[in-house]
Length: 174
Image 1 (cartoon, rainbow, N blue to C red):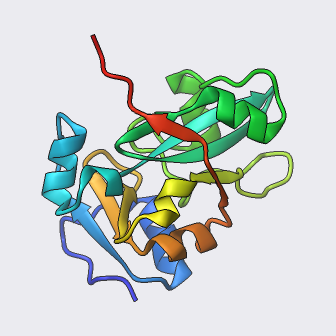
Image 2 (cartoon, helix red, strand yellow):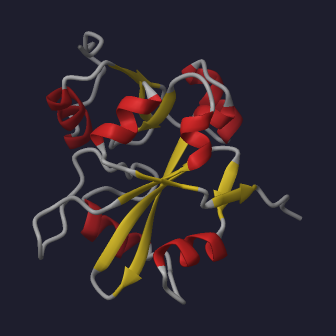
């Protein structure tokens, strides 16, 4: 089961959803961080074990999540090919909040709002590197500076994530 919660563990839909799964996880509350490396350090992990949850707009009113290792970024050509579409986009922060229930920077598939048409969770694509690397992963837990660390295989199973090669190394910023 989950690690015991402490008084500083926030009550978020993500943490409640994780608890409902019955899988083991550990919540880390660390407050604001300025970089991927700092987030990894306070969580006791490597940057590659930190997962970014990105919301992608596939079509009008149709979204999905892409789980990206911290040391990678989405490869838009790979993702478009996988989904069989010519165009994808990332919604602005207000739309992202409206379709997920979370502010940008706190988005996670756990406890997120479902597709209003079907009532089902938005689909999740997990980059193949997530499952090919060893060790647990850390994913946002629905509030700034709050994360959940859990087993990679359990993560993809619980989310019914589609595993695919959809990322590339981070492009150095000028």
